[in-house]
Amino acid sequence: MKVSELQGAQLDYWVGRAAGWHPTILGGRCMQGRETSHEWIEYEPWSPSTDWAIGGRVIERERISINLYGYGREWGAWTRGSCYETDAPDGTGATPLIAAMRAYVASKFGWKVES
Image (cartoon, rainbow, N blue to C red; front, side, top):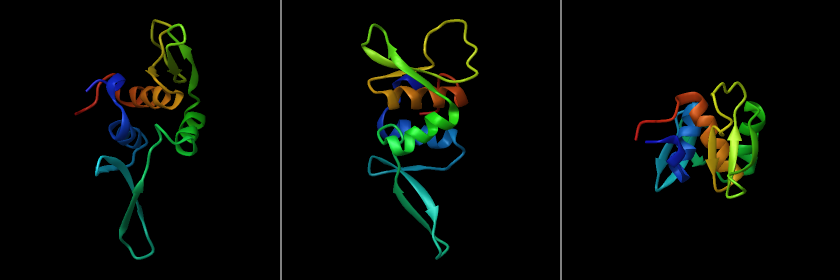
């Protein structure tokens, strides 16, 4: 699947994978597991493409730049170290978080990921 088409739980899942985690999709939502004191895994919703508290940390850590793109029709995001031959963004989307998370996934996996 093209990274530029990822959205919702699928996009969140691949952001987690890009960070080296093992998220899962349950009931149409991306869930991130964490170990509890009882030595079992508790899953909780995890949505960096819609939650600034999560996605904002990815943007800051990865130094992703975000700006309006395409005459203001959508948002574009550029990752640090991008060495493409054009000025086109590494990720685009309807919101800054979607654009940034797509750029992050593309920086780790390229333009396509497994479906």
